[in-house]
Image (cartoon, rainbow over all chains, first blue to last red; front, side):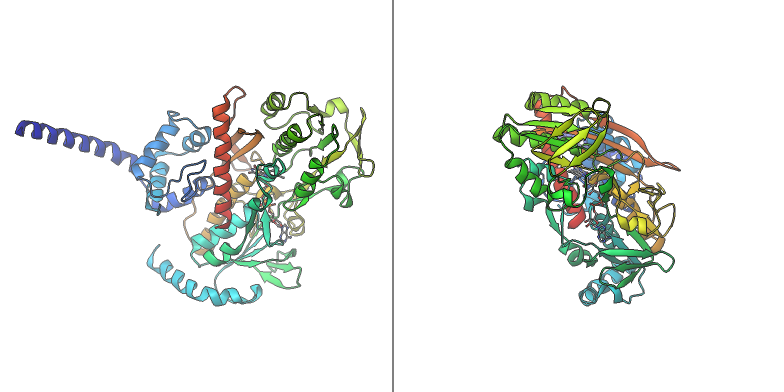
Amino acid sequence: MVNIIFKFFIAISCLLIFRGLLAEPLLDGADFDYGEYLSGQCVTCHQSSSDEGIPAINGAEALYIAEKLMLYKNKELENEVMQLVASALDKEQIASLAIYFNSLEK
Amino acid sequence: MNNLSRRSFVSFALASTSLLAMPAISTGSARPKVVVVGGGAGGATAARYIAKDSKGAIDVTLIEASKHYYTCFYSNLYLGGFRDYDSIGHSYDNLSANHGVNVVHDWAISVDSSARKVRLGSGATVSYDRLVLSPGIDIKYDSIDGYSVEAQTKMPHAWKSGTQVKVLRDQVLNMPKGGTFAMVPPPNPYRCPPGPYERISMVAHILKEKNPTAKIVVIDPKNKFSKQGLFMAGWEKHYPGMVEWIDNDTHGGIKNVNPETMEIETDLDTFKADVACVVPAQRAGAIAMNAGVTDGDWSPIVPASMQTKADGNIYVLGDASVASAMPKSGFSANSQAKVAANHIRGELTDSRVFPAKFSNTCWSLVATNDGIKVGANYKAGDEKIEVVDKFVSKTDEGNAKRKKTYEESIGWYNGITTDMFS
Ligand SMILES: Cc1cc2nc3c(=O)[nH]c(=O)nc-3n(C[C@H](O)[C@H](O)[C@H](O)COP(=O)(O)OP(=O)(O)OC[C@H]3O[C@@H](n4cnc5c(N)ncnc54)[C@H](O)[C@@H]3O)c2cc1C
């Protein structure tokens, strides 16, 4: 039993460390004010609360936003508009947008 | 928000009620002043962002002739019966209530750029440190022989915000059975490149339902148009045999129109219509001409800031500007407004100025749940706004994708109008 708990603990720790390793670089270099400026491009379409037609992104997890943008940038997620927007963003800009939208109320 | 700006925001918020009650011309504050002429896609966005982001540090006055803004975007969907008219109308109330923008409903008549003053229809003047002009287009009535201001009730262009599109819808609904709808699209460059062809689609949509033997003839002064393959495939699919598009080389040129006889004469033939939508050539709104910031019909701008090449204190946004690769669209105007707002705040309050980033996507509806789109992003070159990357819908992408594209456009409409007016 102790063994199982120990293994479970190790597994969880590995997962957290791994996620941490993944997470940090994605949000590296984030600049809140830059994110606020860049967000102007997003809110032409994304609304603060309604999901009609286009999802609301205010208050979403920063890591989630950054991961999605990277996937669009690498054309691993479909949607021409998002692929276009993301392709023109560098890592620092993606991180900045992620922390900015995360700071907004849902 | 740093402490200083938070404090000035609070005091501004306290003072704003009394400020707003005063006439536009005598705010008398020591704050830097920005005047925005035109509360459309470019102007409303610019006024809102400058006021919102400067948190009261800049005194923003918006001069707009109309009390309500009816968007040209989605006016074709109203025409086709997909929206009601009220749903495309927007008020300016939130701009003053939420951001302290001083909204003045009047015409800007002239600009004295050396004294930095704008004269209004009422005779009052408003002074500025920076002036933003986003007046949209004026119609060149004399660009088509026989067309005139009076002709527009008989042959509406319905290419500016307002009620003409209602006249056009009534005319289409009351067209004789088996009658002819004629469309004369404008020559390049003009507001909303896919707009005339979306309009044709929406008219076809009504006719298919209510008047299926009617015909649509498009007498184009151009030989090609935006999203041409997509539109033409859509017309064949949804409205087979109904739409005939005649390019300039085929008809040889539009010689004149006659609103009395409802005739459109070309080198090839004279076309008789029961209902005609005639959209003449266009130019920048008159106030841009008056301000001396145009070269020919439009205002050349500095791509990095949207300042005019003629006067660094005057910015021109949207349709009135020469934005090179960027089409004259609401999306473009909204995108340019944010670049200008950021630059103006930097100049007036020393806030950070970030590199210009522009984008545009134009959605069009071809038939029920059949949406298409074209888009690009842009960067500020030294001389021109340049395309970085672009896309366009594909002819064979399937119904589910097209439905999604239409739904996405509804999200965009709600998004951009919130971004302008909330
Ligand atoms: C049928 C049609 C469909 C369209 N569909 C789309 C679409 O789907 N997507 C898209 O992005 N774009 C679309 N557009 C284009 C879009 O409407 C314009 O490109 C956009 O409105 C341009 O913004 P603007 O700020 O330059 O001018 P406008 O939005 O026209 O705003 C100008 C404002 O200035 C005011 N004004 C002008 N002169 C003065 C003055 N001297 N004093 C005071 N007020 C003044 C006017 O009253 C007006 O409210 C469409 C256009 C049409 C005609």
